[in-house]
View 1 (cartoon, rainbow, N blue to C red):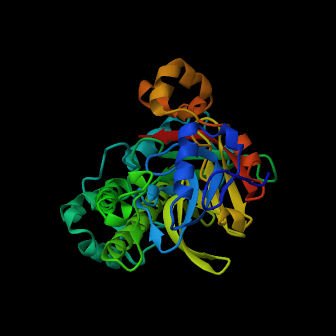
View 2 (view 1 turned 60 degrees about the vertical axis):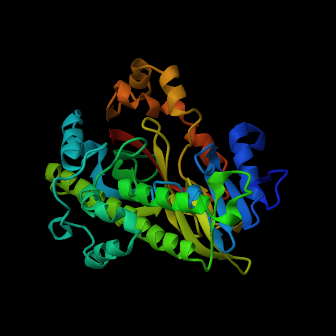
View 3 (view 1 turned 90 degrees about the vertical axis):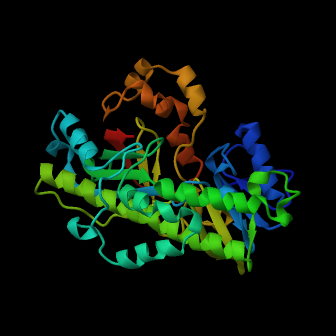
Length: 399
């Protein structure tokens, strides 16, 4: 499809969807971002929608600056997936037992573990760097010092909202019916606590007084505030990555108990709420992907739809106009509150037919109808990624 420039901005804002289809609140956010003096450019993904701090589905390249609220509170939120050797024929007709086993192994919602994960006890989990990782907790913002035990117990837990664990079947191609495992989660409470503390600091800095939106307050390179944020940011992003790695290893273990002969390919993992140091046209920038994945040439990524519509494994095309990025999912087309007013549990049951999942009032706000059409989103970013596999879930676990 290619991009369309968004009019009325200082820095270039390139949009991979119809600019007139963007909700007014989100368009205003994008123009506010494009007006910031530190912004090199913005790429807007086809799943774009209004968000807290900055627009979800935006890629913001800044020179010598970063906005903690634009990154958001779920630092490092992202996806992991792995293809198994199983096929649909290996699965039982009734998948309730498999779903129950997953829920019994991986805490969901507000639940946490009774004791911290011991990496050495989890088959298939990377063993390197754990001691160094946890030793760095003492160097984080002193206001989270009392949260170390909670952070340890929440490692390897799913959380709630739009976080999920799925068992999927590949659609079409030579691997029709191949079983995949997939999950979506982030940095849990510790990422939120770190983010909120730094957002508060940024808002009080004098250079942020006259911004068009106080949620776009930035830290500037070479300042103690920026150094402190980056230290905590990198740690929280690693926490999120390790959190997904623990859950994926545990998920593989659950499946192995049910199917002892199963084999696994190399896992795929990608953040979609994070900051990265990158260079474009010789300019060093800090790239904030808020609801977007890196899609550099050859990069494998994961773009989920909703709990009833399936997902895509993709390979990046490395489009520099989009700062080598792609969408992180379908993107919401209505708020959670609106979804609850619009849909019923009967609607949820109908829209998730054939999927072993919760169908109660507690997850109506995650109904497929509350999200954009993932096939349209994918069609709008053909110059950003190529599809490697199309997946459809048969089990979906939510908190």
